[in-house]
Amino acid sequence: MFTGITEEIGKIIQRRGDGFKIQAEIILEDIKVGDSILVNGVCLTVVKFDKGSFDVDVMPETIHVTNLKLLKAGDRVNLERALRINDRLGGHIVTGHIDATSQLKNKKYIENSCLMEFEIPEAISKYLIKRGSIAVNGVSLTIVELDRNKFKVSLIPHTMKLTNLGELNLGGLVNIEADVIGKYVARLTNGNIQEEISYNTLAKHGFA
Image (cartoon, rainbow, N blue to C red; front, side, top):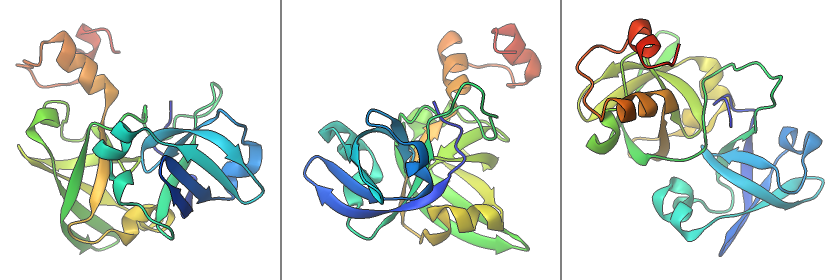
């Protein structure tokens, strides 16, 4: 489990047929073989490491359904270590299981923020709510606007600088994970949520 708070931007050193070697620094401080690392929002397992990098294996299905298929040597990726039981939950609960990929459709700077608009497959739109949480390339963000097939998030300069979202160009592909609480609410209501999701709605279904 993760929080969606990126710890550092790593760099792809090598792409193998079944995985990647990734340059990092902070991630390596207490790393062990078998650790889970969030890479662009995808939960991957460390299979070996050295003083300046770590290696992960990736299943073909994961490559197919995420933007990892586009990564090459030199590309920068968001990295986060798994949440420890005594850590603060600074973002929201992120599992590292990607629901869909999405393209950046628009990017607009408004004062000290950057408003980004992404398309979203209709199949997962039922999990999203305005002011709700979403993970984009593993970064915990708040949905500020939501339509049937697109959503907008607003990024502060700190997020733009410390994640690879600041480098994203129009048409760029990102990994999307919807809030797990929204998925459970949709499941409990058979996907037919007739009332606005609020604190009372969550409490009614045992989430608050």
